[in-house]
Length: 106
Image 1 (tube, helix red, strand yellow):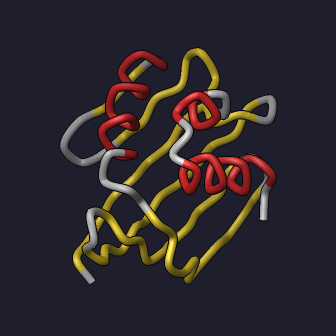
Image 2 (spheres, helix red, strand yellow):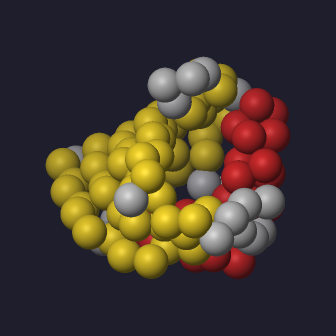
């Protein structure tokens, strides 16, 4: 698994917003179906709320990597409820430059 994803998963598990944000480039964007969060201030706000759901990785079911692009599928627990997570990370200089994220009920 790519080092940036390992760092991100560890930071999320620890609930450490500073460690989470250290993984993003200053011009990063998080793309979801409901909204695009461009820039670290907007990403910090949405990920702070996400950490409030006490995310816990239950199973990383699929993972693929091609150069700077990581694609994953996982089962997460969010606020005590299982959700399927699907997302992509595009890495630049060892940090997340672009991210997509979506959740489905399991």
